[in-house]
Length: 140
Image (tube, rainbow, N blue to C red; front, side, top):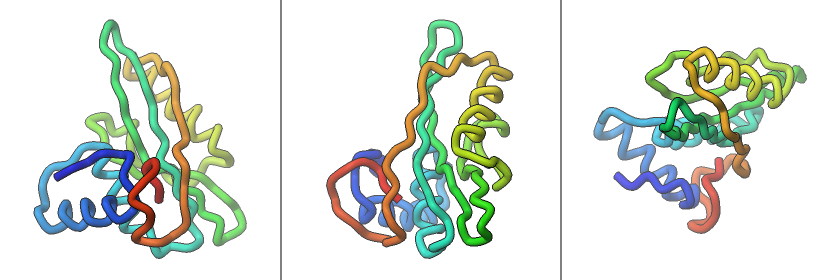
């Protein structure tokens, strides 16, 4: 199973289908692939991969979740879909007023795990098609 983040939506969808079919253990990037695939037809949900780089001691760690914003009810609340060994670094309910509030909450959770967040990045989001260009950053 190839899990490069710089592939297009067609690759994301094919990887998600393989994960579902094989029912294998997954890591954070595969969880984002699944989240993109399973929410692709939810037009009232904006989705953006959100990457974190953190350090604990001399070790550097990278993590990714799928930030989601529900625009259907007019509230625009933010949350996240993901997987991690730490339950505080994955799923977040749709309760955050802004993306920055969601990121700040993740930062606090990292600090509670004795990690220092060195940076974070919101990847590009794109539409609600299951397939797209085969070139470009991970897009949902």
